[in-house]
Image 1 (cartoon, one colour):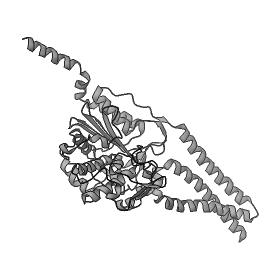
Image 2 (cartoon, rainbow, N blue to C red):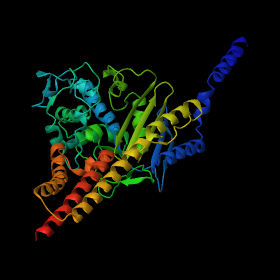
Image 3 (spheres, helix red, strand yellow):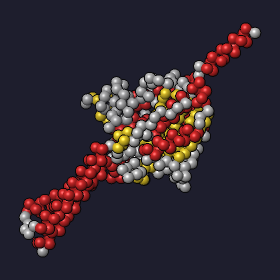
Image 4 (cartoon, rainbow, N blue to C red):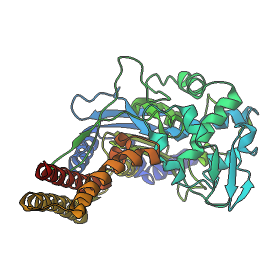
Length: 459
């Protein structure tokens, strides 16, 4: 009797000590939907998909926005790196890939220099973003040129000047994973996409995930958008194809829930746990996280993605959003990242945090207004002066030629310099480029008008 009574008391105390987890085990769909939709309205997010996992089981799936469905396909950007890192881990555990070997062991012709001296970069340093390759190098526009092949992008990344000595500093760079994709191909003897399909996607039943931005015929992905001062603006452009290992995957919230479940099972059934010497999370973060949450975010123009796993509580959350503040109009506003964080807090603690208010950035609006208005005023005044003048001179001809030449040279030479077209430059940095285009358009219109006037006076 005493043992029974003690057992009863112990069970009662354990239950009483964990009210939050018991409460969170039954997620309230109404609370989640209301909270998520409120945040979407604040940030002008048009489409969003949410998935929640508990101890390897999908407990909640929902897609928000017009005609949203759980099969909605999104570009997942840098969340793609979790697949590339996992593929490298499989090959390392199988003894096919040596993470301590220099990159040139697998990519013939690769060379890296630090402060003028050639140095070795190891495979493991690429995985952990400790190669010395800079974030700037990984943001080279040519990597994002629509239609550029994976092989061409790797070829242009084979000779690199490092910013840091390999192994000393963590700096996130897409080039690390671009090269890692090539290493996976060389070590496995399979094309990168084929390896991912055969060894990760197919075994997990991730039937709506693609290791490339090129979807099968008849399939489409959700279109992205960006917030503006007058409402969300559709942002449709050709996605880059070369960055597959670093940020070119496409997936659904449901498939990424399956991916979370795989991580929660320590890679089972995709890796041999007995051969694994380190936790899988080491390929997500630089060092051991300060708390139990491991995560990876991703962004492309018009899209944001976030995947978070709480290793202590067993909860996992994925959020895919078809919006990205490319213009920088908000100082603060909810994002796919913050929504994923808030949902994870809710399932753990039973309450949603207060969302960040959507505060517009007055400096951005002021800069837009001044530059566009100033460019328009300059154009009007210059054209009026050109029309009113009765004489011509070499100085006026030179001025007209200058106003015409600067925009033309800019439009021709800038894409050549960056190795990509205007399409990517515009969607990646619209804030700067819209302002530049306003100035260039004013110069071109001024030069054209002045040249017409001068030619009329001549003839």
